[in-house]
Length: 232
Image (tube, rainbow, N blue to C red; front, top):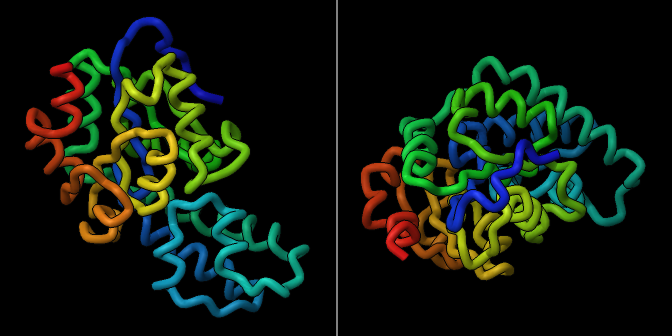
């Protein structure tokens, strides 16, 4: 469930994806999925997997594996991915500037929410890596969404958690799926390329701005869509 609500206390806010946006984990997920698929007898190229990271697990599996497969094996793949990814928790690192970016948004009077579709246990590890809970008003997990990105359910949950409308926020994400999900609600997305998706792909999906990562966004915050949000 989302953490404590900021409902009624803020008029504007920023929603953040976590994996690949604030924490350097996109390629770890790629390796974990690759190994999980191989354990189940499927040889899926890493490049294809990486392009789907950011989708929810069941959607990613359904997208990458053959349509005529025995789908009763999907749960084993999902479980294997979770177990493999968990072994990498001690290696997770926040991108330069992630904690300071969250702090700056918080201290500027914005509601700050993590709009993540990670499993509860993974989200706990990601938040521990960020070490920024004092600057986060709410956070979502896979339990808060019926459908995963590119459907906008997780963003709807994050908006509800901070008591804001789509018109009152900006979203920050690293994947095409982030941009597509936000666009369904009319939320402008700031893209970051630190998760491995190019600026061209993010802009083609509809990102209003693109930065190399949280540190670059922090450096340009005043002139960014977040800065303009503060100026409204």
